[in-house]
Image 1 (cartoon, rainbow, N blue to C red):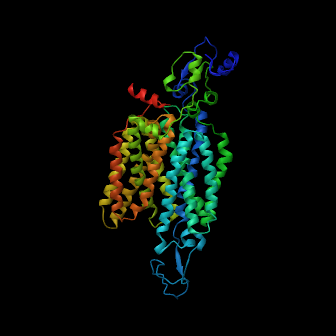
Image 2 (image 1 turned 90 degrees about the vertical axis):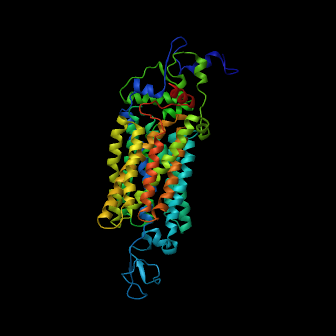
Image 3 (image 1 turned 90 degrees about the horizontal axis):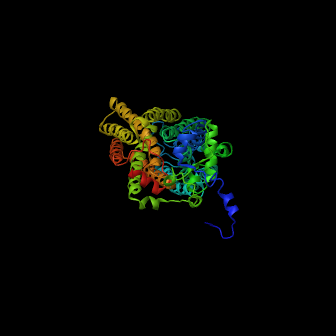
Length: 523
């Protein structure tokens, strides 16, 4: 049966050659997970190289997110002579006469010093942070949709890196506070899509039994980026030069790393670009020293394992498949999963960012403190990765959240200084340890809960919820010494309870379509 009005039979045959070897010879039609396991390799040299290069983008996100720790810090100050009532015993500059004191390091050492964000204007520091995470919230949704639809995973990563480099450099020449705040919002908008796109692009070509530990390993790059940022900030003490220094890596990534990355074969598949998807699979097999027979082709979930050589069916399957959050909400199965994922990510983010802010404000050496905080998350990532494929996503998600929640609640019940202060800090560190593992786990868990056609859209919603939690975290921190611990404890326990209602995804396939995941759950 002809699909083109004036197209000859021979023309149609030529078009179908990439999909079929001959009319009579049957083909083996496999979904991507099966093809990786059977012919291409689940995590060989190709996936390792692609994973490491792609995950470097997480360090870029760390730079743009955490740079405010140093750029917006309140520097130390000193009195100028004995006039103006200035005294070294004064706890703050509020109430001191202008000209009687000065910032150590000069006005250009931070935005607080340059824009006068002290005393009655101190709230503006928190406002900038809220605007940044607000931009992340919007950007996660926008780029989550674009990476599932027109731009793809790699295309979206290209766009966000360009925007990050532009907005970051422009931030360094902000002439006043409000321009600075606007540019931080725009930087947040582009940053919201960096980790999202990089995570999906890095993990989608990995086989099902290796995907968990690979996904968990992406967060080493984020924490490593924070540790590296402390060194960059130590060298570049001016906030303007710091913003330039943390934006240049985005430019380097754009020109040095991105050209060597491949688009996700899963995205090619759902967009109907079967030949492009097969080219990537052949590259994976060749690089991994495997052999992918010519008679084996890719298929979406509901067409997999069909050995029929019917040409018309093959051509029909080339229709582009798209999905959105609306499609997720229409299905009772994915709707419940989305609501649970959003709520858990929200609670987790409040605890993670809240505890991080509490630890950073210890009054110790800022550069060393940020470095140690970043490095302390590594054991949590390692332990979670080692246990992920042994105990499963669900039990580990519940356990890590409750572990964090319990120690936060204990910390909230401790009063006084001295030994009790040390014990509160111990509880805070253990709380961060548990929630860092949860934060890491939730990314891999979320992508496995939804099919390829809507995966980034769903992950974008979860990321938006996390950004809302990040916006609230600084507000909770200022409530006092004990109240924040109690709030973080309740959030950790609540997140663990909600995780009870999620299904286990260990060793389950990554479905491509809504129909595929619904059919798979019936089996």
